[in-house]
Image (cartoon, rainbow, N blue to C red; front, side, top):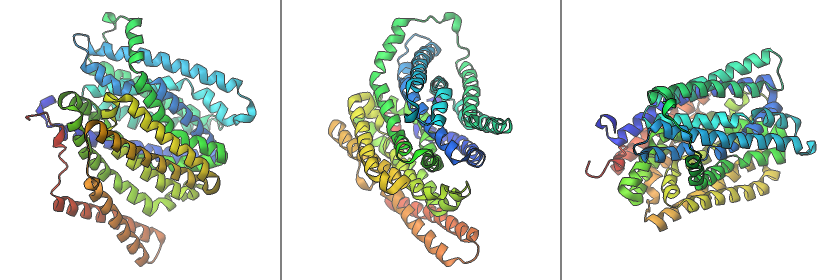
Length: 493
């Protein structure tokens, strides 16, 4: 590790750097949501959300698992130039993504008009080429992270992509492109961010060294074959993360998709907390598996899960307390997604915190990882079909929660039976108990404060966040726990 820094400190420093970038990115996302809701309306936003959900699933498949497997390939590069290993992944991912894009365009063209709304069909057709753009963005930025350089990912994902997209959406609306303005913004943000990412990759590796690079079809095909399990798992994970959106579109139409899509977007900070750790946590977990084995890595990932959960919970507390006025500010109709937003945020929190150990299963028992994800999807779909017709968007969110808990149970059983990893149930009880106490105190304060809603909501929010911090600190001191993540240190360090 560079400069001999402890791995736990390196993970947390990388997480803080990335989290700052995500905070900037979320500012742009909120601005984009206001533009999308206010200027383009709930129906067009719903069609855009459905199209993007399909494109993002294709990115998961076309990416061939490279954003995770690339670290493994680079660590095993031997005498080969690392940048050439990255370029191999770039070429294979580009080919797979363009094939998927062509298939989607052909599918939309051949599908009867009665089975797909015109707005969604247009969105899929226009956005399909950006499957390659988004997947290549993942691969190039993973290559820079292997060098333990986080600034390129932070800048590309948190500044360039979202703010260029916002500017493009405003420009498209001003030009009168009402039907395609949101699609134009997606193209603009993706392409400009991808250009910056390649520039960062070139700087991180001191050039692309193209003159010495040779395309070897056999090597590229070997990468495709090696990525089969990871691609299947990534595809299933992507389907699990979006199948609820597809069901909402089927049962509730574009307007329902717009309301539900807004609820999904508001939960973004919780997802970004987990992603802020992934940049350095993934390669360090891979290295810990290789050097100390799955058993020890399981205990290390449990400590990381608790830290991630502790950082995610204040977001959930805040959304429970002020989620209704926040949704109402986007326009009429969106406030009906309040409970969907709360349930989706909680589900994302549990999924993000307790799936840190997925790499242990993926590297050592890839088919078990596929089965876990398949069970997630099955539970989600069955619950969604039963709950959505009666409970609408709230039923959709509840089905996601059911799927997440099914995955947590199966993941825990797999870790225990296959690797002997059995983390006590009380390991993460402190942060969750602190959040419940904080919310109870916040609601009590809200009921006591009279005057404008802004005052009572502000007092409740301040009480909830401060109460959570105080309760968590007391629990950590009483349990004699710390956040050092020392379990990731090399043996004998």
